[in-house]
Length: 174
Image 1: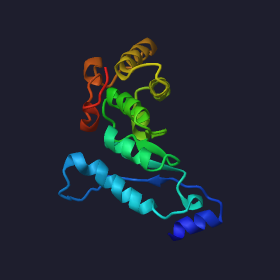
Image 2: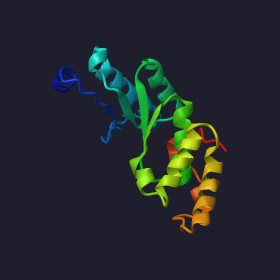
Image 3: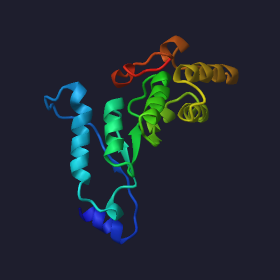
């Protein structure tokens, strides 16, 4: 509370970074998104607009949880965390699903930093976010770009085309 008051008094904007609970809570995996959303809503309830975060940096917990959070307060900008490195298909799939279900910011430090070509991965992420290319096609195009530039891929295109993050698998697109 002191932080919000001090930030507002000094004209400082901030964002709120939210993480999954790392405590064994006994909550079923399919209910984690609802649990995080509930706690976030409690955290933000009663906070005046002038003292609210500019955006949330939020873990992607699937379509239902993201849509629920976005509907909670349509004025709040929700952004998704990039999570672990994963495959490039995971990266593009996360961008695709996050945009589709209401996120407006993507904060993907590790996914970009660990890419074979940071500028090219960001280029294809932007294309996916804009709806110009599908996630699987983005992987194929990214690998073609790497090959054209003589950059060795970390994974084979077959392995890199797989969705490996459980939260992305159900709603994965072709």
